[in-house]
Length: 219
Image (cartoon, rainbow, N blue to C red; front, side, top):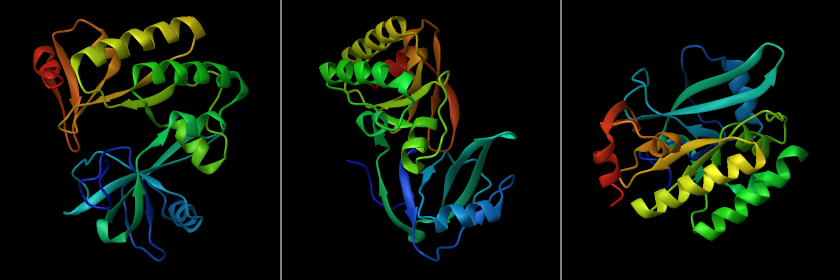
């Protein structure tokens, strides 16, 4: 169960602001672009805190459609009282109908494989933004960003094997994170590797942890 509009919202959760809500535009972002974005009723994604947000504020991210100038990612900070509603990231099924034709078959296969593992991934990144806005974010050479919530080390092993098989068979790439019971997250590729330490992302920090420590969280 994903929490409602509180400062404890997990990274990648989607939030919609109340009409007339105020926010703090963070360095490197454009206020006019954000005004237009939120006026259109579009959501933002909860991002990791980086220390430049006011106390008790959430950091939110918005990705604008790619342009000739490149990709633009904007950041704002808002108080939880400004959030009208929130929800978990989109499911894989919700983005398939909005993806490029060349991605439809691979994603339908991945969705079927994930159903067999009983681990339904959530989607963030460019595929999610395209489904949410109906604007073009995804190219034929894009990667899809996924989020999993396995309940055991055995499920992680199944997940890694399934994703490896899928990538080899369809010649596509899936990036993404595996959630721990603490709400922290690790890259699935690091779990698939053999390094002694794994990068762990929390709501506000990034730190290296021993592989044994990380896997113990799923035991």
